[in-house]
Length: 256
Image (cartoon, rainbow, N blue to C red):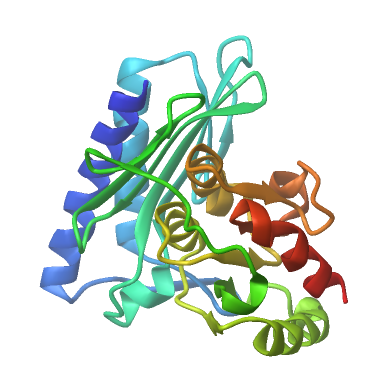
C-alpha cells in the first residue's frame, strides 16, 4: 500500500513539475478568502485517485478537491492533498508538496509527503519508522523549547482565529529560538520528522493537511496532538508536534 501511495505521489509530482516549468495557464480560482485552487490541483488529484482506484477500488477516499468517496467496508480510507501550498505554487515560491495518508480502521497506517521541486520523498508506515528517500529519519534532539526552531502557519481560512493565533505567536516568539512560516503544513511536519524543525503548530487545518505529516513525526520519534495534547487533531484542525522533551513545554506556551 505504501508503494502504491509513492507511485501516486510521484505521478502527481510530475504534473506539478511540468506546470511549474510552464508557468502559465494555471486557471486560478478562489474557493474562499485566501484559499485558491488551480487546474494543477485538480489534475494532480485526478492522477492520484486514478492510481489508488486501480489498485484498491473498494477503498474510501477523502481528497481536498473532490471531497469524500465511500468505499468497501470502511476499513481503509485514503486522505489526499494533491498540492499542499497552492498559494506558494501560484507565486513560484518553492515550498509545496503532495500529501497522501492511509487510515486503517481509523488509525493512520501509511504516509507519503513528496516535495516534487526538491525531489524529496518522505515515507512512513506505522511501527516501521520514517524515511527521507532511503534514509531513516528521526526528530531532533532538542530538549528545551528555548532552543527550538518552530514552524507554524497562519489561520488564513478562518479570520475568527486570528486574535487567538496572534497571542500564541507572541508567546512563541519570546519562548523559542525562532518561528518560521513557510506555507505548507504537510511539509512543515515532514521537516519536524527529519529534524529541520524542532516543533510545529497551526490552527484551522483540514485532515488532508495533517494526516501524512503527523504519522511521519510519530514514526520519527516525535509527539503529535491537538493543543490539549490529545489525539483529536484530525477532527479539531488544531495540531502541535514536537520532539518528546519539547512537546509539553510547547503546549504550555501555546495555552499561556
